[in-house]
Image 1 (cartoon, one colour):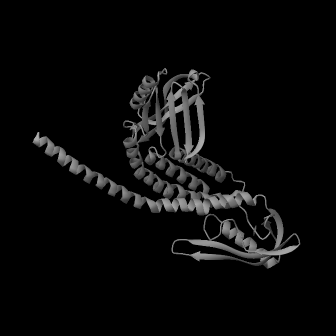
Image 2 (cartoon, one colour):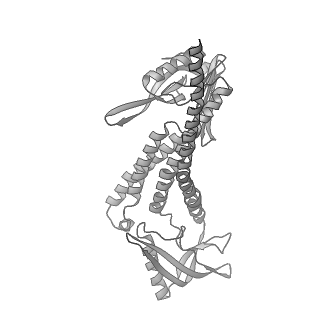
Image 3 (cartoon, rainbow, N blue to C red):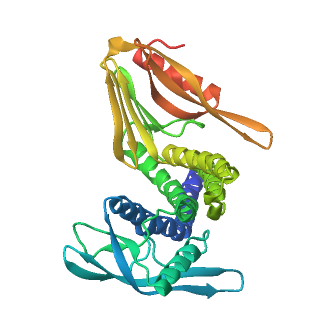
Length: 370
């Protein structure tokens, strides 16, 4: 009896130390993730979204002839590359009043993505030498707001999205990984919700005559960030094909962009959705309710009465192959009598775990399974 109490006491003394070590490791990982998250989120909020907003509103601006006051192409050289910036000022009239502007393109600053800066700089310098007018786009609501070129520049936007996805994805993913265990622990301490078994990234709670489940955002975040990185690389490769070929009759560059950029964009968006969505499910004798959220915002929800639920079954969602090993992931769907399917559990690793959860849900709720 004494030896057992001493062992238990020693184990209890070691557990706080172990938990303290895990907390310290989590804080260090969180601090490591913060700069990555800041770069990605900052690029998204301060560059990508403002660019898309400006491009969208500029589609309604009016073309107005303008006279160039100054125009030049500035070159900044380094040991490995050169970047270019177009600077210009111009005068134009709107509603009988004269204005002066200096905004050249949607994105300010220099870059070396494609030949946009060089081509635009050469065109403006030639117009200045010839004394020829140039067309500018002017905001009808604020005539003092004008721009010479309102092109979106997909290549530059794709390059910025690589930073958003790679840096922001890694940083946010690591922060989710650090914070999720703490939330799960608080949930277990405060109620009857229990973590699902290995291979099931969520929580399940047995309720009177039914079950409540929650699959949070960030499930299998490492896998999905790897897929996002692949998509970003494909998108960048497709977008960075030299754009000066677009005026030629050669279709190969466009097909290359469509193949790499299109596939990359689809993979990138799918990975973002898979990483950022969450699913909450309530299934009992009153029927089924599901809530799908994206970044915490309600995306869609369904309410189904019990007599419309035909059966529950397991469906394979996707497979991942690595080093010759194939891993399948499954979901559980509720088949409705009209033929429609609603997902009630997702990202389940392995058929055995999916079948085990299906049997539990069927036993708790009384709905037919197969």
